[in-house]
Amino acid sequence: MALLPVKDALARLLSNAQCGIHETVSLHEAAGRVLAEPVKALRTQPPFAASAMDGYAVRSADMQSLPARLLQIGESAAGHGFSGSVGPGETVRIFTGAPMPDGADAILIQENAQAGEDGSVTALQTVGAGLYVRPAGLDFTKGDILLERGRVLDPAALSLSAAANHATLDVVKRPVVAILATGDELLEPGSTPGPSQIIASNTYGVAAIARDAGAQIIDLGIVGDEAGEISSAVKAALEANADVLVTLGGASVGDHDLVRDVLEAEGMTLDFWRIAMRPGKPLMVGKLGQTVVLGLPGNPVSSIVCSHLFLKPLIAKLSGSNAVADIREAELTVAMAENDEREDYVRAQSCLSDDGRLCVKPFGRQDSSMLKTLAAADCLIIREPRAAASPPGSKCRILMLR
Image (tube, rainbow, N blue to C red):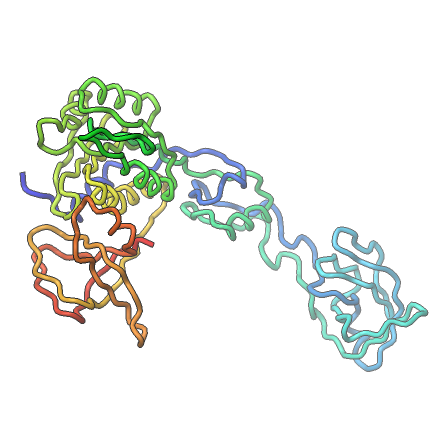
């Protein structure tokens, strides 16, 4: 079977994914979620003309010549407006956010006023109509569409929704991602490994990527290289209505790689297996009922890199968002050899040159078991298949990791 190009593999993976069902959540639960329906204003904001400054509500007609002497007849504060009306030669003490009293059409700020002990206020500067007044509906009017469907609810969007009097919002349900690690050699962190055992690490990095992308995580734990154990874990994912089942390891061609066979025995339709990339060649994609199956390689670096390239966009698609990978152009600081037929994702560190150019230096060793190198990398250099040898200073594309 020919290796599938990365671009084609991603397109086929995403074609298997449909945006999830909707749910209604409170504003406190909505941060980072994706709107399933537009947000319309349920009220006008501000609902009344309001003062933008502390000072005095005045009639601009009274302020054409200085000094203008006015009589203070009351006070308007936020939440406690003045119920009367301002007539000729009168003023009302007012504070920021307070309703403008009837009859007044401008604000004389307190720095430009002098209050007398007899209740008089002397204006020290002329004031035009509308000065420091926020008209009703300045921000939005009842019925306005404030946020479109598909908007990710960031802090500003949440505050706007609250101001529009929404206590709840309709959002796309978070995708449920079940993660299953396989291998007789694997133990949980904190264990004491035997002579042929290692500590399982992939689940934690993959789960963090999925969680950051907006998914709910089900950790199915570790199962050994035994068909019955793997089958039971797969059934548990389906019973939990997982949108995505991520398997870690066991999908290659060795005698102990049983995951693909078990999944097909459970009814999985295999879409593709093995892609033209490094690291991450033995990646598997299929469909088991309504659950998308993403079989990641067992090597730690491979599973993390593939999660950035495939799992994150898959979760975004299921969440109703349109996340775009952070890919930038940079200059190599060292030479890179000619590439083979696989697209290469090379761990590297980026930096800025003295004149502000984005530069990148690959690590010397790129073994797919080396997590220390991945943790030190802030980007991946993307090397196209059959890329020519590149001297220092050559342009390249990098995928930012952090």
